[in-house]
Image (cartoon, rainbow, N blue to C red; front, side, top):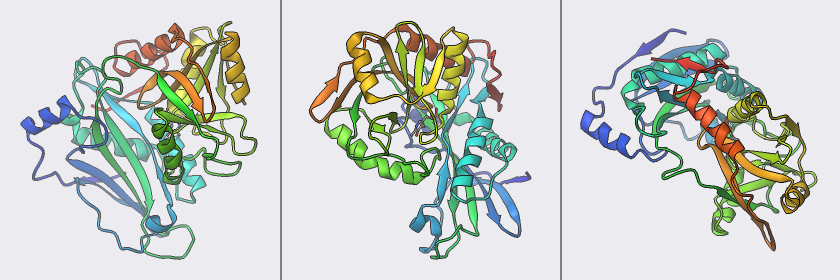
Amino acid sequence: MEISTTPSNTPTSDERLAEILANPGFGTYFTDHMFTVEWTPDAGWHNARITPYGPLTLDPATAVLHYAQETFEGMKAYRHGDGSIWSFRPEENGARMVRSSQRLAFPELPVDDFVQAVDALVTADQRWVPDASAGEKSLYIRPFMIATEAFLGVRPSQHVTFMVIASPAGAYFKGGVKPVTLWLSEEYTRAGRGGMGAAKTGGNYASSLVAQQEAIGQGCDQVVFLDASHGKYVEELGGMNLYFVYADGHIVTPETGTILEGITRASVIELAGKMGHQVEERKFSIDEWRDGVASGEITEIFACGTAAVVTPVGELKWAGGSVPSVPAGDVATRIRAGLVDIQFGRADDTFGWMHRIV
Ligand SMILES: Cc1ncc(COP(=O)(O)O)c(C=O)c1O
């Protein structure tokens, strides 16, 4: 892919950037540039460019605004101790975006072009990648694809735009890893059979907001969704996948199909396997959760995703009941350290997961 570059005339000053990177929060500040490439049936993907970050001008009839034909990704760039900048399994994000695109009737952006686009933006805005000494700070990268044809007919858009933006992110846990408390949504589900649960698309998150709001209202951090058919099997959290560790060392994680195939999830399965744990991907019922904790058979529960990497799970609550937390054990701690050390270049990348950008 040929990428043209128009540098910003008003890049963020070094002083202002230092202020932002000292306390970036999440998703609030954006780098000086953005990547864009467009697609039409005749021209295919064309006009790839890096331009100054700025607002889009959209016709009010633009399809994405009406029918939510949209997919996105979430990934990070990490600065290592020697100053180099790396991403974690970017081709997996690219491949997942292809699968999401297929489900949303979008054209496919080749994985190589996806990785090149991310690399080009991170290279252009490399001074925005926080220092290695800054705890677990990173540059969060948000690739997304939107239906940009101005047309109100319900059919796949004949003009598509893929963009990449980036935003520095603070450590997810300030002052140490702390368990997330969970609210079980009995009223709302996230995805049904044949639905879009495995796709990373805005509609799934729009439908999760009311359940997440309920969780917050109940004093919990995150919502747990059950399967839509039986209301019985544990699927995933609003933005993380789940793991249950048993006393004999084996680990169970809900099987895919209606859940998002987390890249952290897949990496945890590989890492846990290497650490000697047998990992089962299968249906896992809420009764197994409750009974396993009560009997002491389940010795650890944790969740994972790009944002928090791995986090222990605390109490699970629902209207009229709860399952107490299991004391945080060392399986989650060891897996977390294993992943974070690879991402920040403090451990050998024996899996070949890291991709050098700068
Ligand atoms: C619904 C949902 N499940 C799971 C995950 C974890 O996926 P990943 O490990 O690729 O970040 C995410 C993304 O953060 C998510 O939004």
